[in-house]
Length: 466
Image (cartoon, rainbow, N blue to C red; front, side):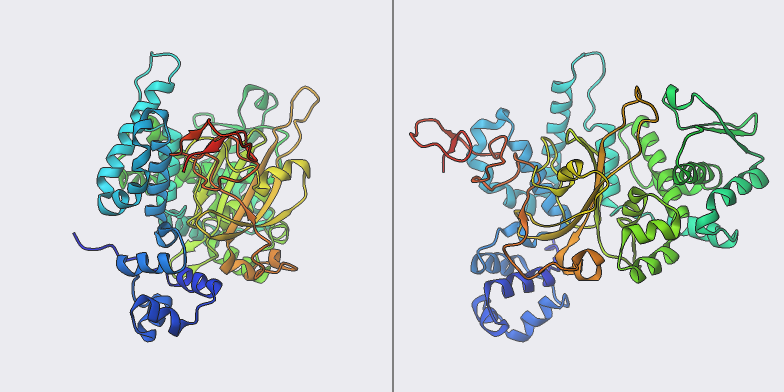
């Protein structure tokens, strides 16, 4: 089996400079020529496994620092799985996880699939439903993540419709109403009571009517109209994308179909080339883009995380939407940012501080355990409940990019991006985070045994062996 090529030049250069090595001296430590190192750092040559291990040793880095996104995600997930008390006797095997993921990725994937099947069965309260290898929402999220949240055929179809029909961002609501009426014979009817029934909209093809809740924000209605347009006109494109993936159930396929229709809606509201040019001109200022396109803060953030067209890429962002209890409602990433598989996310993440400052944009520099630093932009989103008895939903979103892209954004203004003490130390969740001295820890890190025989008391109410 041929060795997988890993291009990690930018990460290698950052780590080298942070450690104070000149290129010539570092090349000597690696046993290669300075010109060869220069080619590696310029991503003209791949980083071999031997050099990766050597660089990690010289720079005192975790070996996963240089892993690609998929490999790092697989290793994180496997480590979390092995944290289950079921594998208590295997705690000594934690050091072998990297070797397994790197040397036998298919075996590692098979183990994780088997563990998911076990976990699904164990956590089913009522033993009346068959356990699935993966929960449908998780399976769809993983699929979207594997595509870096970018579906090129749908993106181009939405952009073509926008341009050929002469739509305009600030009149898109009226444009889509007219389009649905002229092309499909569908009229928009405001219907009181839909929201109380748990619905935003309902399509009645026979009557030629699309019922929408009467008190929706304009940008929400635009999104629904665009979603329905995608269902009516690009079902073939959606089905072609679905055929590229072997989903485990029809329920999962249905959720994926809905996700693609939503993707089309976002791409139609914010057509790629127009939005890309506007984002560059505004230095990714979310609020300026809101006004320019008549979209919500959440819609702009989510669209920014999808801008990965090969010949015209935007900044690779990750996007997360969470509620006040820490439940992740939506997530996607074009970065190597790692999300927790289970357990609560990190409380030091600024998305949770946003709930204490509703409506305010919070900016944070944060460093993850793999020594990557991110610029995070967080804010609460959503509207009030509409009445006293309709409790508003407390949700917030966070948009993040690696620090190498931060200077392209307005949010880096006033930040000392080169100050190593400025970033907050965040992690993917306590179970997967290796920072044992963190006073915010809620549970021990995976793969560690507790020392209950000590007379010491640490910043958390337990000590760890080893």
